[in-house]
Image (tube, rainbow, N blue to C red; front, side, top):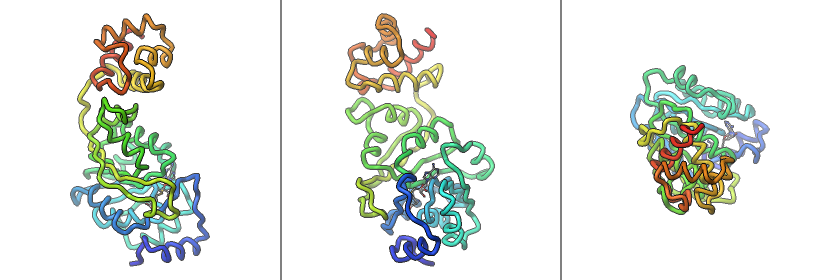
Length: 285
Ligand code: SAM
């Protein structure tokens, strides 16, 4: 079996298929041989695991997942990679490649159709240009998955794994904490990729759990979180007032009924605070 982390093997495969890297599609392929086995080991927690992979590239992570999981469904947008994957993963019969944009797919339908009776995990070296939308989609779609194990830019990893109430927290931190417990697994240097990106990366794992706060309406909850962080240097009173286009008296009343200090900044608020504000906004609407 050819090593898909070997630069000369990659060059040979890509040149035979006339493939050139697309920067726009975030194509930085892994060449560090220790990274994919570690990611796959973390993602596949039992033999009856079905893995949804996003962006298999030439299949370097896919192969490690296929060795451990019952089935892998890999969603790849770039159709030029389909014949490459046919070649590199020819020996596996537990793989399905779907040529689609992951942001456009009905993932609940895909999972229900492909992974019947299996524990489901998501694993990916994510294209960095869509890290946040992909993670938000995976969470907001309420997919029946146990874990999401993904490579992201180091800065994104810090935000995604930040403790709420700290400087690094942001709107996505709050969303992540609502749905799951994040963990930074390990760092990966830029030299681990071909071509090498300008930034370092990290692998994180999000373990899904039942939400610990229960806002009356999830849409309003996330709208409030986004609005509060939209101008994070402002007080929550000013940020909510300008982002939700509500006058300050109305926002002051909302914050008072939610028991939240109007002079606090969004990064200081807990999920319980956001839920209380969202409920007050929802009642008013
Ligand atoms: N998994 C491979 C690896 O680790 O070497 C490739 C990872 S590369 C960072 C990202 C992959 O995602 C590329 O194969 C790219 O074509 C694919 N991709 C980019 N945008 C996508 C989208 N919207 N939906 C599905 N795949 C996408």
